[in-house]
Image (cartoon, rainbow, N blue to C red; front, side, top):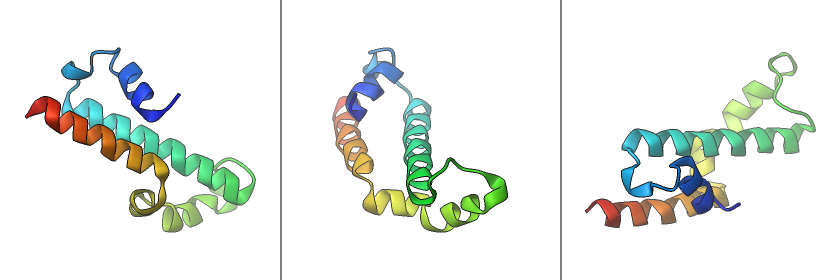
Length: 88
C-alpha cells in the first residue's frame, strides 16, 4: 500500500475532514517506520537500547536525514500539496 493509500486509510477515507494534528501524527508515524526499518537494515536487528543502535540511529537517522533522503518523504510532499489545494 503506498503512502497516499495509507493516508486515506488513516483518515477512514475522509481526507477532507482530517485535521492538522491528524496529518502531523501520520507524518511522524511514517518517519518512525522509516527510521525503524533503516536501523534494522543497518544493524541487522530491531532497535535495542542496550546495544547502542538508538544513539547511532539518533545521530544518522534523524528527521533531517528523512527529509533529505527518504522516498517516503517525497510521497508525503505530494500529498501535502494536494492537502493545500483542498484547504485553500
